[in-house]
Image (tube, rainbow, N blue to C red):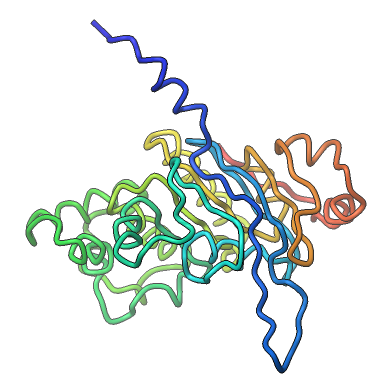
Length: 273
C-alpha cells in the first residue's frame, strides 16, 4: 500500500529549489570603472521545473550563472539551493555541491576532450568522486548514453566521430553521471542548427519528466525559451527588466524591451514532442 506523503514533504516540493536574492557584481577596478555586470538580480527556480534567463549579449545572464555556480565571487546578495545559502561556502563544500549541480556548456565541440573516448568522458565525474570500480563505471556510462538516446556501442568512439547534436547529448550524459538535482544549461543549443535544437529540447523535456530534474536555462533565443520554460527572467544591462510565468511573458509582456525582443523572434517555433 502506498504511504501518504508527510505535510513537510509536500511543502518541500512547493519550495523553490533555487532562490537568488539581490545578486550584485562589479568588475570595476581603481583604474577603470564599468557599469555593474549584475545589479540586484533576484528570481527563483521551481523544483522539477525550468527558469530561463534571457537577454542580449552583455545582459548579465551568464555572469549571473557564474555567480550561482561559485565561479565568480558575488559582491552582495545570496543564493539559496535547497534551503542552504551556498553563496559563501568553502571550496570543500562546493565540491560536494558539484554532485548536485552540473553544467552543460554552449559549445559541444569545445567542451569535450577530443583525446578521450566517450566512456572516459562520461566516467570522468564518477572517477573524480571515486564512485564505483572501472567495470561499474563502464556500465554506468553505457546506461547514460542510452538515456540520451545514443547507442552504447559508441563508448569507444571519440568526439571527432560525432555530429554536433551527438556531442551535446554526450555532454548531457556526462552532466547526469552524478545524478544531480539541477542542470545549468548555458546556451546549450546555440551551436546547433534548428532541426537538431528541436531534438535536444525534446530530450531535455523527456529527461526532466523521467528524472525530476530542475533546469536553469540561459539563452538569447526566445523561440527556444518559450518551448522549455516555466518561469522567464528578462535581463538587460545587468538588471532584471521583468519576470514571470512563461506564457505571461510571451502573451502579455510588461516592458517595451521585452516587446522588442519578442518582435525579433524569427517566424519559426521549434517543435517539442
